[in-house]
Image (tube, rainbow, N blue to C red; front, side, top):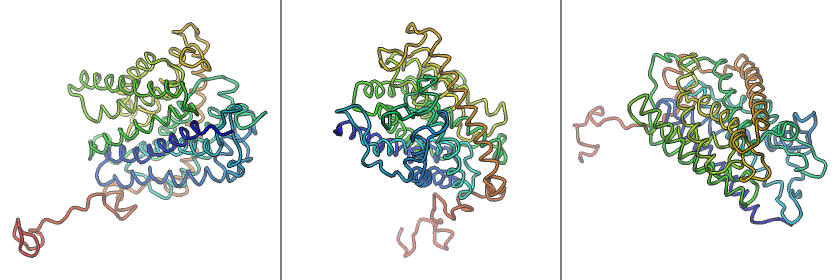
Length: 438
């Protein structure tokens, strides 16, 4: 009864999404100063471990178990992933193992909380952060995942899911609300709790390793094929549409971002190209399976331009979102969600809807707006409470001396670049190594 092709595609997609987390670690690591790169990469990478344990014990069950409270949260029927190995989902002759789906969705939970590292880069302590990851995943991510991803009847006849997808009928193919808008709103709350870096914004903070940034962006782009096309849950036409739309939107977003840089700053930059690609990928995420390629191109260029312009907001409002999680993920996801109401087409996916430009009027647009603001509001308030409590009890932020001297040393007793001492400082003549050889 198992469809082996679809199962293989889903498991491969899960592996692609998993790769996005180390890709994000490289992307973020290259954008910070050399004295903080290990801490930023460690905070990102450890999300794989922390969220993996949460997902095993109760995370999947609360996100995708049968609804327990009016479309807001699931129950504990899959506590410890008990029984998932023998359960299949889908119509007759086209079934998937539920455990494969659980593995796929785990990677979404991991990358979502990992995105928040960019908001507080260079000033967060490791162990309080790990506690925050567990608490935030439980309080913020799991309910939002239930609202958006848990369809009625998915896990069995009569099973019920979240309110955004089943009652409001908002469209979100791969996580514009639960991942992107959620992370952007949470980033603002986190920064408000722990404050700005010492010296910001007067002290210029330049990326220490742009090749890291470019390579990380490439890994994110590669993994995003699993993120978006894998959300079709099968090797089918919608997966192909999502796959193509993912690349098209990223491509046009790069162009849009670089044009803004050229006009505003006089030069296109490698950091801009990498950031533009991510902005396009974010913007197309909610609508990748619901729009046609021309719609994806429009969404990409709009997201690239808007996100590039949004970078300046943190300086205007004094919000030290270190690596621009709000501008790229929050505003990019917000833009992508609303543009579904304009560009969605049943020609791309009969299970979707027609947006304004395809004769559907404003019906889908208002549904998208309600879903977006609901996710934004819940994420901001819940994140602020979780972060404030952990910060007050355990000190989420490193002290001033540790931050200025280098958080890699204070938190991990390591440095990313252990440069050898010059021979002249060891009593040797310049140009000669120990043993007398040049």
